[in-house]
Amino acid sequence: MLQRITLCKNEVCCCTDIMTQYTIVEKVPDHMYYHCGYCESSLACAKGLWAHTMNAVDYQALIDRGWRRSGKYCYKPIMNKTCCPQYTIRCGILDFKPTKSKRKVIKKMRDFLMTEGDEALNKWKAKHQDGGRSQSASNEVLHKTPETDASPMETIDSKCVASRAMKEISKGAGPDPSKPRRVKAKVMRQERSKSKKTEMASGDSSTSSSSSFSSSSSELMLPHNVADADFKRKLEVRTVRACVEDSEFQKYRPESFSVYRKYQTVIHGDEPDECTEKQWIRFLVDCPLNRDSDGPGPGYGNYHQHYVLDGKIVAVGVIDILPNCVSSVYLYYDPDYGFLSMGVYTALSEIAFSRSLHSQSAQLKYYYMGFYIHNCQKMRYKREYPPSYLLCPETYDWVPVQLCLDTLDKTKYARLNVLNGGSTTTGDPERGSRSDVDNIAVLYQRGITTYFQYARYKYPLVSSCEGEDNSNRDNVESQRKRWQLHSMKAELSDLEDYVASVGTSCASRMLLHRATRD
Image (cartoon, rainbow, N blue to C red):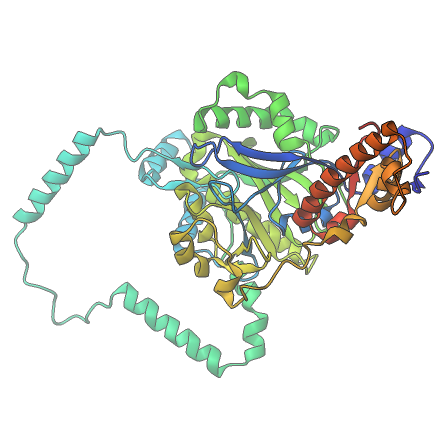
């Protein structure tokens, strides 16, 4: 008989109890050589799991081994085989400081919120629509806004006229010698930097270290987080639990879906009948994560962050709150507001949100931006949120992205730990072996057991005849034994791969569902 812990008497009660306490997954066959959306080849390869339910701790462990989720489907690129290796990338939120280009996006939003009326808005848009890229840290798409309404030939003619005009300007007498010499801005910045370093070296080191986080936080003052600002327009971020049973989610469901459909058709070129509400729910609402109110902020789980401008949803960022990070899942926005660089702004907003959660939970120190694909140009913007780190696909160590760029320029797939002083012989401590397969947690017939006990129940002939003389057994039983032995060997090989991909800790903790009938 199968030795197991029976959780309850009926299937319905069992499912309710188990799904609120455990991670339950099913292994699906490797997805080999399917269409790649990045290079348009048919050489993409990935492993897959279907997650019925999942704890935040387990999902955190999985994404730290290169997994990601899309709805309830979890996948892990087979890095040494796939056409476009996808490296998990994360940003250290405590040391993050926005670059000049990011600060420009913040200023752009601040200036926009100061406009009032359509006429002022049109003038503002004409001034700021400069062809900049709207980089999305969530949906891995670059949206380009038009430079001007003029045709290419008109632009060329205007440049020629300007060039001729410059040539006609006569040379002046030079700068006024009676006035002080003007110092270049670059030189002034260098001098300020030197003086700051001198002050830090001569000052109290404990004070400088303790103020590092607050200093970087002050540089990320996003307009929607500024209280009592004298803005003409109102921008707020509303965090809603992504769940069809949630009343607040239902309240904004039609408007949120409308923005998604508009985004997919305009930005991605999807057909309107492809963007159904059912597809949206399956992709961005259905989630295996168990909501845990013990987590920081609203608790662990999946959330939609509505960016509401004057009472209207203009963008939605989909995020997972996990023990060590906020993980960005997707972003969609109203294309009419693409001139605000919503991709960059929402990424900065999610970093600021992550920092607020860190103040409640010290272990939450990172912002995960999904996958980084070096050979895909439109994905390279993700490395522009320093300090950023890539996950080594062989040792699962984190390596600063700047150390990886030269190597990834030469080869798509690389063992990254050696670039940060690691050894070429270092292995994955969680890879496991044949003996670890016996310790896999299995959910079978309303009970939890180990694979060792499950195999003895499923393959009784193999288990009972180990070490026995089988020469006197009839042919029928011998054939059944050979079939069971063949099936067991195939299953063992599949489960060894499962342990290696999820790690021994997750394999012994998550429940691998096995069908009642095989």
